[in-house]
Amino acid sequence: MFHTPVETRFAIVDRLIAHGDRPLAFPAAMDLSRHQVAAPGDCDALRFAAQARKSASRNAFQPAFSASDWRAFSSFCISQRLPAGYRVMIPGRADRTLRFVVEGSLWQESAVDAKRTKALLPGTILGEDAVFSDAPSDLDVRTLEDSLVLELSLSRQRELTASCPAIAFELLRATGAVIAARGRVSAPREELAAN
Image 1 (cartoon, helix red, strand yellow):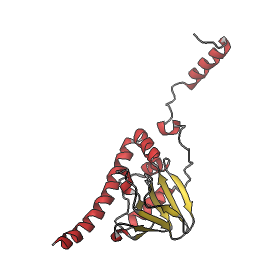
Image 2: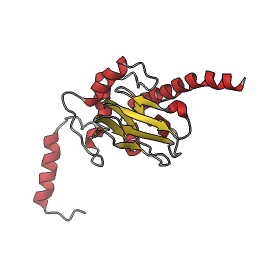
Image 3: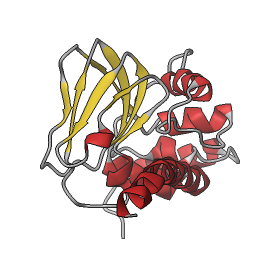
């Protein structure tokens, strides 16, 4: 059955026995297919959450996450330091990455809808439409100053869903809330224009 020497097999069994009844590692920690990003003491996601709580923007992302949920969430994100003038999103390209502004500011322009031109400040979310659609974006987004952005790619969103379904569900709910808030503001303007 095994083509290993008897001593090696006994060594493997000894290691398994030595493991004892310690609990297995958390599934996200066992995932070797994604980059393991060490969470610093000052977690970027917690800093983002603090900024979002203070923000009055319709794009403020305010899920019902605990501090430990934010830490787990941040383990699936990549922190990106972006220089001023960096082009984050290009119109016509499909980009399924969800971004969270931690520091700095970004400028968003839409080739289709002038009402979507705005500054994105810390605590706001970018790319919320891409969570629900494969369509290419019409947004051109650039950094106005050196900025820190958390990025959650589509593959990492899938990993988050598999590892932490409750956090992934709350992520979708809060993302949908941002889209709904934007829709509530633009709907009265469209009704007035139609009348």
